[in-house]
Image (tube, rainbow, N blue to C red; front, side):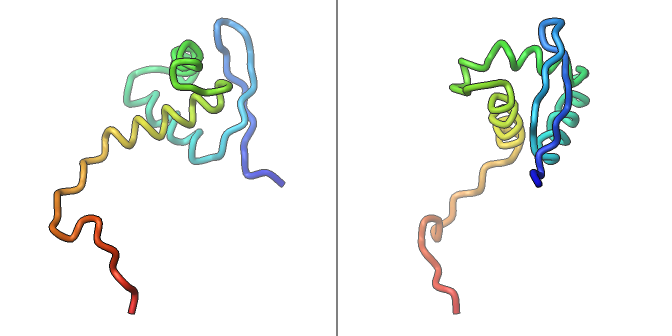
Length: 90
């Protein structure tokens, strides 16, 4: 059984189905709320970007967008003299 959840959203006035993992649905809902949009409005915007983000379909564009959104909100790690060095496990 798939862990993906199928939901319907309206894009360009037409109902379409998207199958995403629960974490991506939660991320999409969180982003929509932060940006003052509905999930449908956000999906409409993403549908226009499918080719721009090098995605094959809307579900892929959503996954890429959610990842990029939260990645850009995450502070970059501080430079460390140990950065890039492999550490052996004991």
